Amino acid sequence: MPLPFLTADRAFDASAEDTALPFDDHVSWRRPYRPGPWRVSAAAALLLLASFVLLAAMIIAFAGSASGGGACLALAAVVIVCALRLLRVGAWVSRHGVRRVAFFRTTTVAWDKAAALRTVQQPVKWLGLPRTVQGQALVVVRRTGEQLPPLVTDHNADFLARAEAFDRATDTIEAWGAEYRVG
Image (tube, rainbow, N blue to C red; front, side):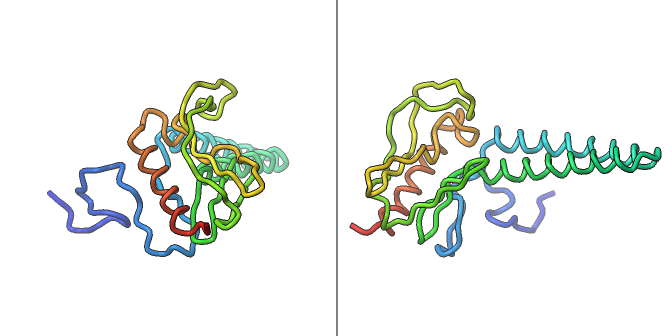
């Protein structure tokens, strides 16, 4: 039985799962692609771990050890924050510039400070681990000549084994750059 409602960004029975997200508001920061299955799976595993730690905190607190329960509660809060931060990692765009959100650091480059935005062939990290493989990366070069670490790569947690999604995302980010970059 088909349900008559629509989801937030597409029809319920839409066949394409890798469609780009719609952008009506160019002022707010948007991720021009969907988070990949590796990123979502890792965040879900962390949230599952946090639920077990919260259950342990409740059992320890009811057993009479308030300090142990508090420590478990603090650990669960840290794991939840890490899972949420992991979901925010990636490239974000707006009319103001491009933002590279990493786990511990966020770098924003205004469009007028970016000299070039291009996809290059280079060694990239596989799933963010120290192992590098040959792949493609979307890089931003500032007007000062400084090249930022890659915004997205075809071997990161969003695009591993999803070449079409990587091409679509890089084309979208480059289109934002072409629209808003000066000169």
